[in-house]
Length: 180
Image (cartoon, rainbow, N blue to C red; front, side):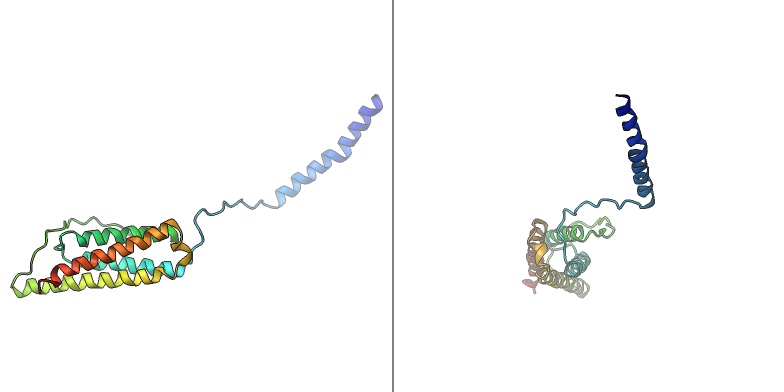
């Protein structure tokens, strides 16, 4: 029995402790690579989504330049475009542009007055809404190039939001197109 204890102590001293010490020394020499979690969001092709993002930013800016005289469709169009923009920015992992609070409230539909300055202002507003609509249509066309992303739930929602924004922009433009 004494021999078994002596043999066990010999094995521990000669083999187990040095092996453990070598393992500790090796681990201190090479740093461990951190384990990276797998991304939950699908890999997206950033080029078409980057172009879509820019079109949506430009569309919102153009529609913000238009007068708040469209009785609601302008606001709905901007809101839908902003929601689509938010979905695209989340997919791209991009910070949204700084928000500025607008003190401008949507006004009821106002028919153009006969004075030249008001007619010119409304014409400029119509041009801004038309530019916004063109940007939205370009974004919709570019979304088709992001096939893998538009098959996801956020992508499908963005497509619907852009389509809704286009319809509302057309409705806004039609308010004053009829009155000419």
